[in-house]
Image 1 (tube, helix red, strand yellow):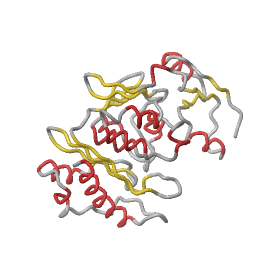
Image 2 (spheres, one colour; image 1 turned 90 degrees about the vertical axis):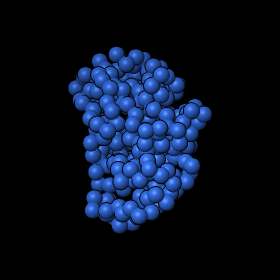
Image 3 (cartoon, helix red, strand yellow; image 1 turned 90 degrees about the horizontal axis):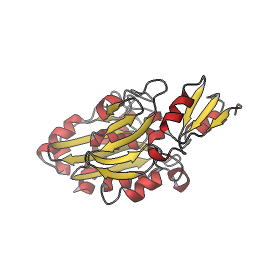
Length: 262
């Protein structure tokens, strides 16, 4: 690991100022960034820790839904979102292991946008809004491909607002070594329809399975997707699973998520 300067601001405004410096990198839970630095694949001159910013922590209900501060750990989301949004709480409780859940944050996960991360599926399926120090970004506009988001240079995620669905569930098939999702599906049923988001499967990152959304909006039952076919064309093909295997998992896990939500 290369030498670096460590800064721990206490407000979003101070964090933004610190990020304006040359070679500065935001640090949230550090579950991806620090191992990357240890492997000398990243060498920021300044690490700007967001864990001291109180306004970026916590879970609370508001007029627009469930608001989660970007520096909130997975463990806190799992504990505090359970009564209002059980699907999100269960997802958070299944991320990594206790060490990861007590250090990793929702903002760090979304900023990194790993193609196998769990949170992107919840954000996309719920039609959540990502709040930054500059603007509000709709979930459908935020995710732009593998490890790619709508965030601009120096932009910091401050919170995420989730519209709370009537029914929801997340089901994933774990990659046993990393506990990332080999494939994961989040299903969210709202009064005006169903949204289905898939993570871990596609070379394009998290995506909505719109054919399943249409079928489940008409009939919210696992059997509604039985006749659908998922193309393996853009699916990840690696030593953990072929593209065809992942395509099949999308369908299987969607059915399980609907059963779990029901």
